[in-house]
Image 1 (tube, one colour):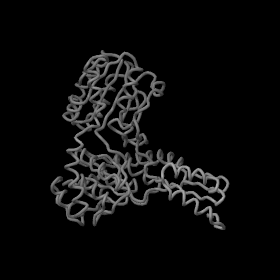
Image 2 (cartoon, helix red, strand yellow):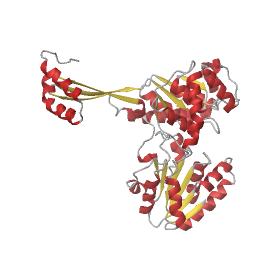
Image 3 (cartoon, helix red, strand yellow):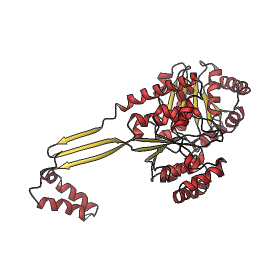
Image 4 (cartoon, one colour):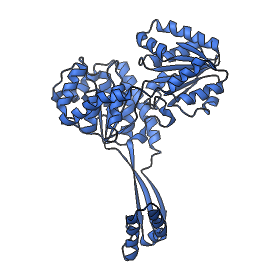
Length: 439
């Protein structure tokens, strides 16, 4: 893991690379992904079966694409009772947090003035598809985080797609889906799964929105089908920035950097500190902790290629760097984290104090762990209940109310050279006796 001092040439070069982390092999990936999307759109289930055999090395008949209810029941018997208790507790906490947020989403917003009625209605989406990764590991936490907010706000149908495994879908994923209220589960993954959700096939109905993380091919597929359906975000590799002074044990900092790095070789783990000596201590601690980590090869590759320790003179400079990077996860492991939080403008989620590791947010805290990556925290937010609500505006004017705005509408229409708009108002002003629309 590299160490850079503020002011050094390598310091700014590293930051430049981090800020450009969203500029990936976009065009090359799109060339690979587009034909698969179009093939699924054209051939439906036949294409799904074909690509599952090619990419996942799994032969699956069409009638087995959807997981049966008895398989979900059987899954409960395949996981330890203590872990089942943990899944239930996590589901309760995630549901409770998102219910609090949903109370702020009123069903309608009204505004009335003489002769005018304006309103915005808010309704849940009808059908949502969730992508749950299943390649390198099993992610029941992703199921809970994606499905529960949708269920809380009243989405009518929730589907899951997840890559098939030769040993079967993880029983924890199936149980989590049941606890979250998922309606259907399909054993299909990759680009072909995104295509199925976006366009629909004989076995998988088209959805209104696709959410959930995935690899770079899945992310590219989601980007390309946006417009056909809505998506939550185009997610990149996971990332963390830790701001720490010497008041936090270096073992805590090292453990949290490793926890992020073990996700993926492309994960980004950064420490920003005001003490070079502390940085070197953390680096040595990382090397020691990695020696006994099962996923040390992945974590080591991530830390070597993407990780860094940045040494700055003051915490104020650290916070400027945080806002430049706009990380998915930000840990403030400093003596006064709440006073420092006011300086954070861009971060997906903030973890304050030495006993709030990012890991607790991944699983048990309650707020959502599906977060903006690759600097998109500058303009986007964590997945939440708001993402499963759509808004519709409606309005009603009496003739007298419309007359008050007649000249203004005509002025706009004249400026924008839209004569028909002006005539639409004039036509109504010539008529009389039309009733005010009543509710």
